[in-house]
Length: 440
Image (cartoon, rainbow, N blue to C red; front, side, top):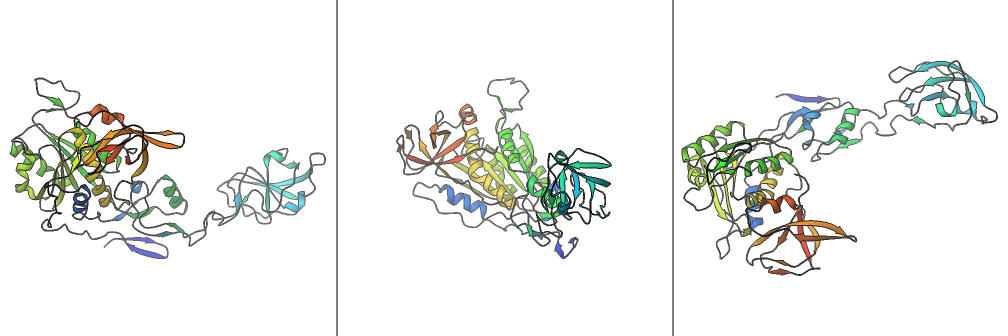
């Protein structure tokens, strides 16, 4: 097995994958209406997937991914005393009496730039010109900024004193050898990558970006940019919307359109994607209609589970483990708003589990209703909404109606209001829970 080697440590570079279950466990219980609670269905799906195995990768390849090791520094940062300013390395005591009226003159004994070794020792009564980041020469204990001098090259006049240690970046003043730089479970961003690079670390253990294939099905679908040639055709919004949401979560994503309701065409299209997929997402074809073809072909692809969830929009849901590798497949309803809300409820948590990212689920935010909100009792209602700041309060108002085809309202919103199964009316001024939609 390949190893990721660093001084003072040896760690395994590749984690053995956890195989998916051979069959689906018993599904969660349903209510008297035959429907599952949203949280129960979500937790059921999360129990059927495991984080992707980690492996060693370069820093830039790991950007946005989850670290799978604790990392400690193997050096001090800075690694040596260096100049904070362009100026002159001096002995502070040599210029203690300098002033604007009576400047002190020092002989310039040399020049040190960033990258030079800076080993020339500074003698008493002299100065060495230094650039920002240059090593502090032995014997010097301070830097006089260029602005405090006349900028001379052979002899320099100093107009202001400096204290010992002033304008010097001391070795280890940022990070000490042995300090912990990052912890297992942290997500690598630009700042932490900069820190690791400064410490000389070029490779980390991280979970890869999930490879996700988004498949849209339906004989009515036409790609954007192509004309609608007959009545009944529509441009394919779902696959673009869901693929964009997947990409925003940090995944590799491919979009596949199957403009057909023929079972064999759909089966072949899905099967062809398994070689490159850690997760397959379909939109459409999971309800009870004659042309809900995804539901028809699933038994031939693997083990599957179809359910009605007590939520609106997004009641029909499907899940399966397909192919020899038991690739997870989440089947979303075909109406655009239903597909998007279902993504937020179920797909996003599954992706985050594959990546090893916490928290898995949305963190609800408490807001104040700006107007009356009404909901159908018995279902968790997801209302498209706009959250705004008002005198230190977060006010939320619904956007448009509840219909699952209203993409204009979905595009205008920045939040989803959660109205519980027992809620029928929320009055203006009452508190409600909201999922913010700020990352896609």
